[in-house]
Length: 130
Image 1: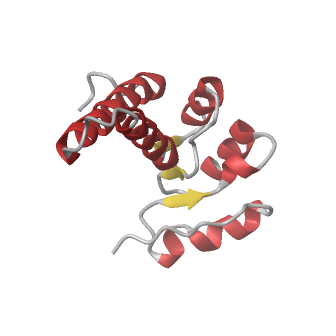
Image 2: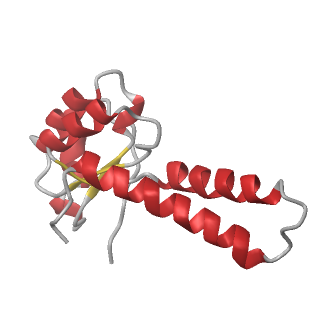
């Protein structure tokens, strides 16, 4: 089982308790809530010996995401950003009163999510690596 502890990290010595000693295979922290994101990622990467996950990356600048990846983040979550893209595209289609078929506004939402994912794949440097 994969466990994802979400902690606001304040003390690096506490991080070791949430590493391999408890059997976790990845560490997910809300480091984006700290002032220096890349510095926090660097501290965590040098404290725990498991892959790092960046929760709450929606809204972070491309530079901040790239800096976190450079410091050891291996998984980046953009869920809010993707939901926002889907919702905005759906709302846009629904302004047309002639549209009544859910497939039409669903397709617009899906297309918006695909575009957002393509952009983030490039930001994360993952293009061509699947």
